[in-house]
Length: 334
Image 1: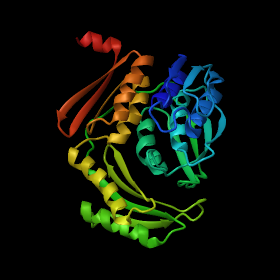
Image 2: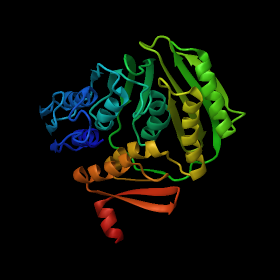
Image 3: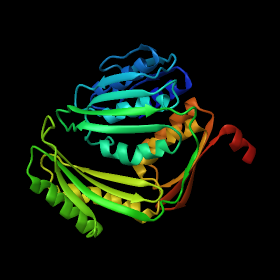
Image 4: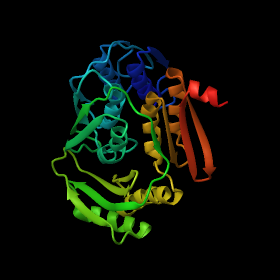
């Protein structure tokens, strides 16, 4: 998280950085394939000077140049998340000197990363409310362990990003459950849906099992979507060997239930992802669940690059409000 956010902020602000002890506490420390792809993607977009961009490196220096719009292709080469690579370079392209088109290959539906549908339905609508127009299209899903997914993103930039307030989700306007199955039995998806419906009591929700046999390897995901007047939340359960389908469906439903019961306008995973563009816009406010470790890390990293403050107001045990202000505004209010 620190590396990806630092790359995004360096691109957007023109500030160089050096990061040491990258992933030092992990079983395999240093840059992995996914992280290296993000570094090189960022370097390509701004013609940066980079030292330490190699597999296993724990020390990286990044000196950005001028961000250039254009047509870019980035491939992770494994099932590493291509959606996280996209999110690394996107903020700077939102206010670039022209439209851009990104073609990304790698993992699109893997654990510990936002699946494509989350990007398309929850994340990008927030970005588009800030001025730019960004659209995404999935051409082939990529599951673990082979990856091989592919999607494209088109960016029509805006001169600047506008601050945004999302504190009330508004009334629910729609909800659906979708299981995606690749080279596996449909019964897996049906069992996941049944478990999710039971936990949420969504008897009226639209539910479908979709085949994705164009994928390179077997895989499965269940996606729960709630559309409200002012926001969209997507939660996911990832199928994996040895885990019953009903448990996968229940995991996605549990996360959705927590979101709905909190009254928050922004889900926990979306919260840490929109902080950075809101900080670049110079302001924003939203309600969310108690912040994740990623969100806390995001706040700290933003402070190294931008003159903004991020305040977190605990409304109750299940609901927090995040307020982003420029340092000048924050000082004037004191």
